[in-house]
Length: 304
Image 1: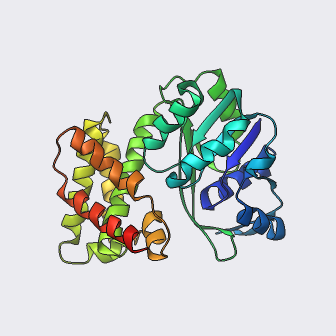
Image 2: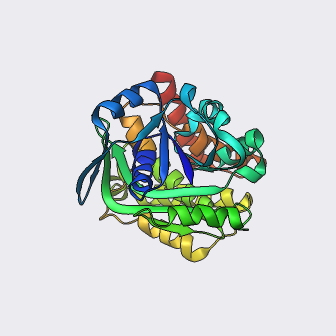
Image 3: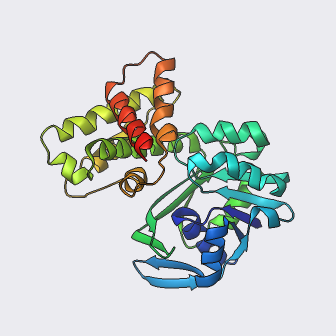
């Protein structure tokens, strides 16, 4: 299977490297700065088990040739419009596109551009970041990759994707209910991002502060009400596990959006929080805590 990994940051770099190490034909589509960095240093993985370096196949948008069987999109959501332009020449009649982005807005955007039949569901769970020299740092052993047809019908095309991905040295989950997995991932990451960005700290600091637990539970409840109104079929055991994970004061957690904010980077405010507010408005839901988070993030973006 010919695979194009659109992006070689922490997510794309890690999972793309594992696919390449498993013998898959993987090309990383990257910008000039990342291209030069990877050419000079290779793709470096720093994991709990040690350091690995590989020489990846690289491409820039101007040098893409031929169609790919699978395109995995791993860029930040605010870069999606440009990436769609970049990957367009690589999308053929049989190409499948698997976005691993935060939120859900990107699914409709990709379907509108390339067709509903080309977009499949995907998400990952990994604690990883990029180091100062572009190395991919996996901070914990967690490395799960979920994928499946958005309508739950995992036909022969999806079976072929599973055959390529399941032996790539990561924990793969071939799901026949990927939409619920996507809703639940959004519930987790948006609650985490909202409370960390609003309080400017990790969950341990928030939960041990006066009113912190109430803040987290209030944000969680607002988000759950929004996604349920939008079509999420609540799985009580799954949502309880998410809240339990977030509410553990012994485990300090932060979101990628919070880490980007503290470093002065652009953030996925519209895609993670703003889109929830648009959906809440559609159903006339009151979301005062999410509104406060959104104002906070908008002010940050104005001040950048």
